[in-house]
Amino acid sequence: MPRVSISLPDELLQDLDYIAKRRRRSRSELLRETIEFYLRQHTELHRWENPRVLRAIETQDRLARQDQDTEWDPVKEIHRIRETRR
Image (cartoon, rainbow, N blue to C red; front, side):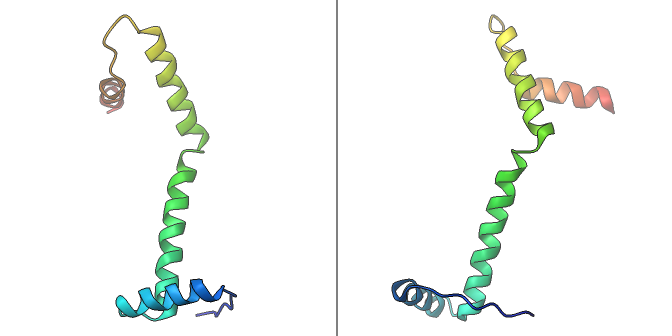
């Protein structure tokens, strides 16, 4: 596994060591877990930047505005569309 060297302020390093000790992890393990968690969260956010997802959201919003007089349910509409594709 490649090694990475980073600089941390003393207080941050102390916090890292404290948590690592309490969780019975090495610094490396804790940093790896933290980075993996951060990247998973970041990836989830990017999903909303997908043009297909944005287009679907815009379509739902447009349809909801058109059907303001009725009880339009976007979830039911999605289920209906998915059923017609099967």
